[in-house]
Length: 482
Ligand code: G6P
Image 1 (cartoon, helix red, strand yellow):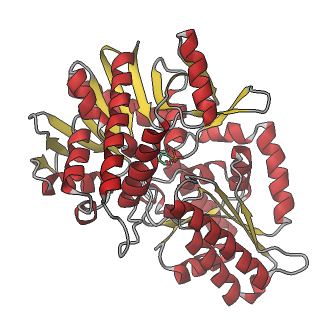
Image 2 (image 1 turned 30 degrees about the vertical axis):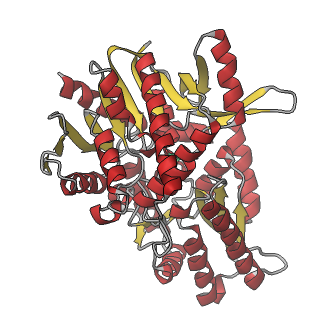
Image 3 (image 1 turned 90 degrees about the vertical axis):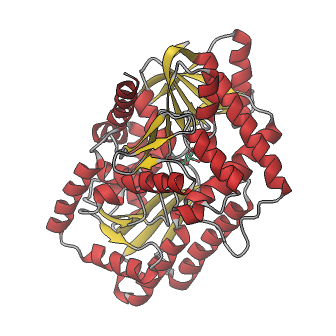
């Protein structure tokens, strides 16, 4: 049992079984793991996560037989992992249908509204599975947490778990953190009212609700008000149905610059830097690093780049767009279609502009962390243009590791724009003409201005590194309980 338990759908590592039946492991994908990994490494605590891949299930069964928890090695230290094996059908509806296709789409305004969402009988069944997986997480946290301990529940997959856990264990301190944006009340109200109420009531089972930036916290508070909860927007509190006061606060997550720079200095990332230099061949290098994700706005990024080449014939042959977009949520038809469109858009630019010696776009779909770090280190421009994004850690990792004072082109709808707005070229993510101009501005920017902006970006990026970000939540939870 542990004094501190963290619960999230995705765990810090993902296991794969190789051809000989041996287990290999790699880093879990996405911003949530990137934040929590360094925050928790080396701390006494247990991380409860779902067994997602077949390798995760094999790994979970092996430790279950031994009756112990698995200790996993992260870059920054070790963590203890409790892996939950969930019935595959239930997991599929909880993860794909409800978490990713409904709540994620909702919080990022991704619905193709004339057609979706449709809350039919299939959704109702999926919702019951979402409830039961949340219940399984609450039971596992109950199992793992010490009397009077603290539990930190993560993200939209586990919106119901805080209230379920409180019912089982009123002795615990409970916090919940949302790693994505929160939509405004009108959009949020697209959910069936029973489901919207359950999400809010579930989260309000916590003592402390964390968001990445004040805008998302404000939207959450407004949703609570619309749903009839008493709330105090100034104090950032909501009164839960049982009369408890729940605190709602923003914790603007940053990166640990020293840590990342040490990581880039390692041999594997150095080897990749040589590969990236070879790819660029002295050309102006525009980099993006994302999951292949609808909210990341990869298509409009390519469109803006194509327009930039079209309008500026003189830059042709002198610039390369290296777009890293590694596969994500491949079971969803929307993601399959998006991947195909992205490949097609990249190919269309290449077909139109390529020469015998120049390939304008290089699209990379394989997940390779050292390669991604190397690309960020060598970039002249880092493009981060999400339609909406809770924070976007790439926007902060890039400046931390940049060796070339990279210009950051940043969507105003990323939470990161709050911290990096002074140093970045901030754009409207829907305006591809503006993006094309931003590429031209970046390419023409004098070295001293690049340096000035890069220093502002480095400062903004490391304002609240993961360990401090997590410590702030721990301290606040302790203060609220005292
Ligand atoms: C975002 C979410 C995380 C999620 C990650 C990767 O960062 O906030 O909760 O883990 O994306 O997505 P995936 O569906 O692969 O876990």
